[in-house]
Image (cartoon, rainbow, N blue to C red; front, top):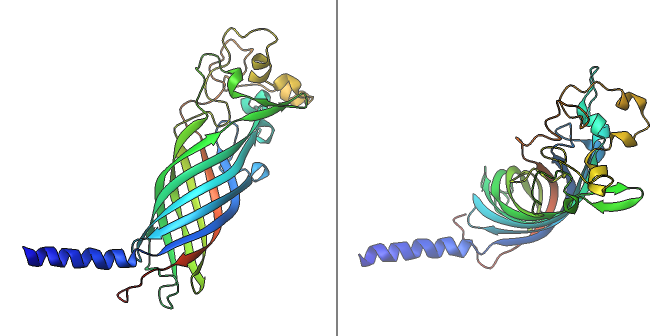
Length: 278
């Protein structure tokens, strides 16, 4: 029994000795979003930025945990939606939004190859990642040259106010490359799957019994603001015209919104102990 405990203690001692590797650095790259006001998987016109801080704790050459603080922006606009010959309701809605995103998250990384900063042999590896995060957002739009916060207006009155703080699940991968001694250059892509459909303030039905002339009523449907006569004459076939008796949805509540971060990172490894086994 004592021999087993001694072997177990030696094993964890060796493991913890190597696990003193940790990294600090920053990330920079584009941020994008997918939801009811985005009609493409990646809309380059509405792609925005992201800045972040990155910390990584290495357990061994295969497994690490990464903590991130990200600040970025997402946006969408119906005017960039694809218009087929028969017309499309998103163009007639003429909605748009922008929102800052502040996120704190942690993810596990699994290196496909062994990776050790400063190693000549194990200096490059692709990796997979998955984790959990909390983020804050606040969709806004510009109306009559004023910045308007959309959430308090309840542009979809049949729904309660949604929370501006939500959880997300980053899932993705990337590559890491030891460029010089303890410096690591990396690229990471991760989609943030969320539990909300309101990143863009659009999810379900139009306002029910709106107050005439209210700001919420004005911003629930903005097709009347455009001077493009083709938008006004579009034949809407997906039941998204609030003036139609067959109207059902303002958005699509079946699919929750997501946002994506593409990040280039540069980190420095701080090593307290080393283990020749790796």
